[in-house]
Image 1 (cartoon, rainbow, N blue to C red):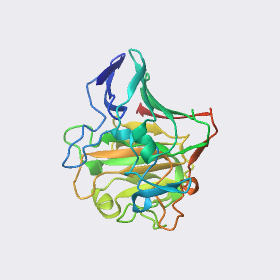
Image 2: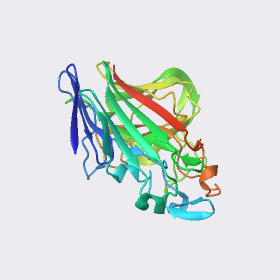
Image 3: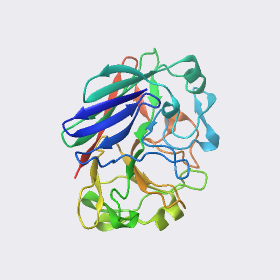
Image 4: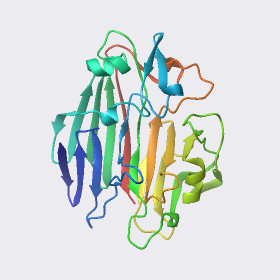
Length: 292
């Protein structure tokens, strides 16, 4: 089911399949969310839960038992229900079921709130632990932003500009989508990372951990409107576009969790940035996208 949102001259659309915001248009009708295309990624803005990235051999150990789960988890393929709805916001809910318990043995409630703001939108993840045991999970976003945003522009005309000057090299995944400590082209006492399809063709994903910045702006090198993502509540942010496709989008991905390390134990409890909730506890994390 598709749900339309509106605030002032800004409009958005949310789908219950995957619980994702799939459209955001400004007052001029410019679309910011990638529309999906099987040729270069049919996704748009998936919610990542209860894992982020790939598992080693596609499996993870929980409570001494091995479970199989696809990359980025099952929420993005699940049908959510509407828990709350207004003109400028919607809250979608996903609960555990016999099917999810076969792949992830925890009772859970995941609520995703999409809210239009005066300058963009925010997305909040709320996870509840309704069971009698501790709940472990990872969560993140995979927001595809059209890049370029306007006709006559190129992907390479755009820049990522961080809130602060940084000295850091990002992690990059192996061919199997795992982490082994290899580093890619990064930030050398600068706040700016120029975009180049050739870089993503070579490294696939740039994964930053330990940034001083709590936000990043995607914008044209000569100015003009772009987007600023604030990700303060997430310890990692990744940037991705389909390699070798020349695709006209860039995904901005705030993560609380990441792909498996090649030398990790395989136990879910040992995954970097895994979140632990005591029975009855609730965790909320938000990111915002603002037009700049």
